Structures are given as structure tokens and as C-alpha cells.
Length: 475
Ligand code: NAP
Image (spheres, rainbow, N blue to C red):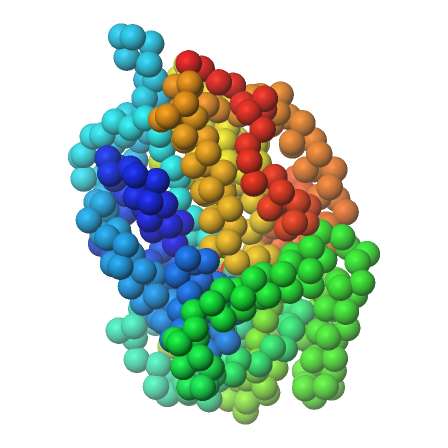
């Protein structure tokens, strides 16, 4: 999504001498990799669209993953993006080197052996893309088919199969809703229950589609309205653990649980932490899926995995044919495992040894002209990442302009600016709902929420124009 966006905006700004490196043989990022049954985006489709490419054909309020991927491919084709993409080339190393005239440039190497040199590098490498495999004894000994949710094996026949799903995050919930009643038996292995907000997913009817086709400005207005409403009721709310909106979200989740689920199962599914502390799960029908006669909730801790299935600590053996690991992602990776060597030989791996951080989520000191989209500390998980990337890219393009048309050769955040940003960020993070007493992928190894801890409005303001006094400018 962010790479396609960059290629479009670079062309619009008049650049033709750029390459997009893509490790896979196709476009689509997260929507190429996540093809599990039920995959969809829980940001409304008319908000989860590029602002410059509204789509009158969205089928649902929350459209399925395949449709989203097709949208990105279509927009990319329409803007001539594939011509700039080098498929099957994973960037393995980036090194900032000075030439004989003291001018620094990025020297890049790929898995295919390509070498390239660039004045500016934009990292659009994504966040939730390195699967986290659970550390469970015997995982490799399982005799049936086993795969991570983001590596779904479509060659496995699920008809009549006994399927186990480990995890209760957004991926697992969508998988369970799609598989309940469609497989022989479904077992959900829950380590921690999740709060689930019920939101229906109606189809968008032909009358509305026709209206959008005839008057695209209606979609622009809708995008703006959805963005405003998402900011006010969700993104701005979760950064203040005492906000009224957070309390309303909590009440709605409680009503969903109490009204839909029968009493015994209900208590097993009831979280003991506050709603939205973990990333809120949104589903129209998860609790119904959990009450299907062939769906079973397993709350006993997993002891080990054996060839026949999962053994829980109470000694019970849960026999399975297929095991789905909906166990999340290594969210602290960002550009890694790429080796990134900045000015003076400093390695990004060392700089990020404690935790990844970037000034305003964009730039790291001593890594000049390397700018990140959806990098560390951005507003991930609570908003449309497309709008996040669009705002970030507009900011980055202003920095690029200083390099290509302006007076500077190298731009990177000042160490002091990052220190101040980090101090304020950690202070603000303590007030967010994510720090209210649960474990989640928002937290770093020290238990500090790593996402943007301020309102989305503040993010918009900050992204409007870079404060060059916070950057080290060479040139
Ligand atoms: P996740 O939210 O990180 O959930 C991982 C789940 O696996 C958790 O329930 C976790 O339990 C469990 N788990 C991990 N290791 C385990 C172990 N060893 N034993 C038992 N359980 C284990 O991952 P995700 O569901 O893939 O979602 C990640 C993010 O992707 C979401 O928060 C969302 O931002 C995005 N996403 C969005 C959508 C959407 O738009 N609809 C869909 C999917 C994903 P604990 O809670 O106990 O740690």
C-alpha cells in the first residue's frame, strides 16, 4: 500500500529515476500475504482507500481482503506503478557511503544480487508482516497441516476437518467466524479473551454504487466524514484512558458479550482488562460463531503439541487435522532483517537494540535521507494506515524537495530532537488505554506502548510541514 503510494506520488512530483524494490513477485503487501478465510479490513472501505482514488465498487462496508488487494493492483496499474517495480528483489543491505566529493548516497543490495545507488530511500516495508510463531513444545511434531494465519495453505482441504486455531486477536476472530460450521470441528485455543465490538458489515447496495459512479465527489465527502468520525470516536479516544468515548466503547463491548453469549461460555470469554487496552476486535458475528455446536472454546493452557493434536495442562488431548497459528506478528522489525548501515558505519540493528524509534516516526539520526512510512511510533492499529501513509509521504516529499530542489544534500533527525520526542512520547504513552494493564503487541519489551500516543489530530498537525530546526541539514 505504502510502496504503491510512493511510486504514484513520486511520479506526480516529476520523478522518473526511481525503483520500487519488492521481495515478492506481486503487489499487495499485507493483502497479498493474508489470504485466510474471512480476511477483511476493519476500517470501512471508503476510508481504507487512497484519498485520490475513491472506489465506487466497494462491495461492503468492510470489504474482503481479495477485493482490497484487487483495488491496490488496479490503482497501481492505472498509475503505471508496475513499470517501476523490481519484483522478487528483497533489499538485504543498505549502506550510506561518502563518495570522493564527500557526498553521501545509499548503496543498496538485493537478494537477487542487484546493486543500486540512491540519493533518497523511502522505506515502505510495513509493520505487521513478520509472523510470530509461538514457542510451544512439540510444534514441529504435529502430523497434520500447520501454518501461520498470514501463510494460509489453500491446498489443505478443510471439509470435515478438525481445525484448531491458536490466538484470539483480529486474525483469529475473522478465521473463526468464517470456519464455524464450515469445517468438521473447530477448536479455539484462548490464552487471553478479547473484547469484541459488534459492528455489522452490510453490502453496499447498487443505488449507492451508482451514485458514487456518477458523482465521485460524494465519495470524497464520505472519506472525510469517516475520517473525522474515526478520529473523534476511536483514534483520539484511545489515547486518553479516561475519555468518554473509551467508556462508551467498553459499554458496547460488554453489551455485545452479555446479550449474545450464553452465561457459561460468556464468563470464559470475558476479559479481565479494560476494553481497547489490547487492539479492539471488531466483528459482526464472532460470538455467534463461538456458539455453533461444532465450535469449542479451550481455555486450559496449552502444555505441548503432539503429532495428533494439542495437549492442554489438564491432560486432555485435543485431536486435530489442521492447526492454525493466529499468533500475531513481530511488530518491532520494520526494515529488518535488512542490514542498514548509516553515517560513520552505525548500524540500525544497534541503534534499535533496545527498541525501535524514529523522530515523528519518519527519520533516525545518522541515517540521512532514509525516510520511513509506517515506521516506529506511528499511529498504527487505530486508524486507516492509508491516511497515515499519505500524511507521512506528503511530509517526506517536503524533505525530499529540500534535497532535490533545495539547498541540502543530506537530511536526518537531530539526536536531540529524537530524545525530546521519545521523552514526551513515553510520558504520553502512560496515559493511553494501552497502558491500562494488559499485554499486547502495542507494548515494547519494557511494557511501554510504542504507537503514537497522542491524538490523530496532533499527528495531522505534525505531518503538515517538517520543522527543519529538528533536522540535521548537510549541504
Ligand atoms: P495479535 O493481535 O497479536 O494476536 C495474537 C494472538 O495469539 C493473541 O490472542 C495471543 O494471546 C495469541 N498467542 C500468541 N502466542 C501464543 C501462545 N504461545 N499460546 C497461546 N496463544 C498465543 O495478532 P493478529 O490477530 O494477527 O492481529 C494483529 C493485528 O493485525 C491486529 O491487532 C490488527 O491491527 C491487524 N489485523 C487487522 C485485521 C482487520 O483489519 N480486520 C485483521 C487481522 C489483523 P495473548 O493475547 O495472550 O498474547
